[in-house]
Amino acid sequence: MAIMRSPRGFTLIELLVVLAALAALLAIAAPRYFQHVDRSREVVLRHNLAAMREAIDKFHADRSRYPSGLQELVNERYLRALPLDPLTERADSWLPLGPNGQPATAVMSDVRSGAPGLARDGTSYADW
Image 1 (tube, rainbow, N blue to C red):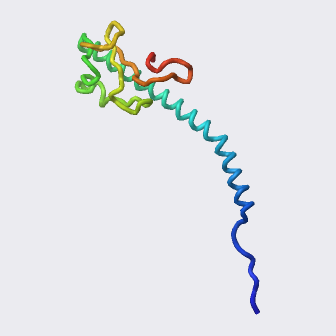
Image 2 (cartoon, rainbow, N blue to C red; image 1 turned 60 degrees about the vertical axis):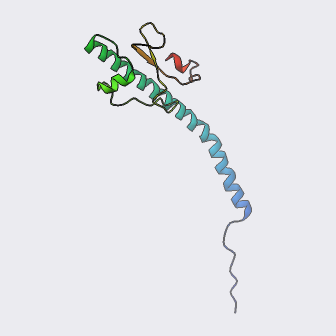
């Protein structure tokens, strides 16, 4: 006597319902995730700029002159390493500024991000 077994597995309708539910959850969660990623990059950028500006100020207070560039801050151990710009993901995109606010030629007294674009609050990253 043969025993009839019911087929195992899911029907196509059941799979489609589960996939539709997952798609709805992703449609809600994905935009919020990307907003948080953008916000965290901006926070890291502000922190990196503050740390480099503090190192420039300490260098100036110790030596009574401004550094010639960011690499001098690393060489003299005011920074361990040049931080990455979180928006460009590069350490060489920083824009050093001279005492007059123009791009640095001989000495630098400030630094800005070289990232193009606008922040979430509408300000330019280059103005931070």
